[in-house]
Image 1: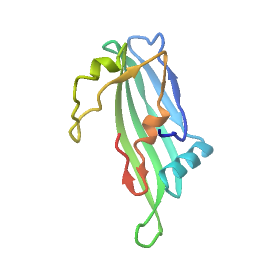
Image 2: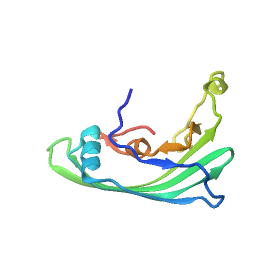
Image 3: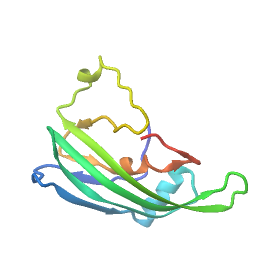
Image 4: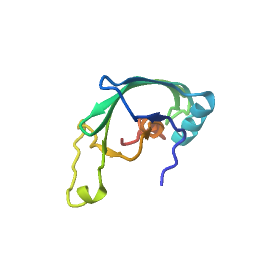
Length: 143
């Protein structure tokens, strides 16, 4: 079980048809927790901006993640700055049940959209979604 370094809960109850804007900036403590989780020296900045809107019996979240981080060179261990700029699309479907998917194999090719996730309740934690896009000990973590 993965313990994520921070949480960003959004409320998706009563979303207007046009959706709502989303904006997040990680605190110094959250950035330090994310750096420790990823095994990198530092996350100097992390912001996410986008929107959440109703989508086919659930919700769709579109974000742009930007982050400045520091990794260690694998040869010299010299700090190496890196800038992340990624687009994220996640869909959550209400009344999605594991039993519905149990008999279906899901294959995802590189570049494909992630399959929809279950929407249980009126809140979604986007902290883990952002953390999944960070390099883990020099490698990209699958999302």
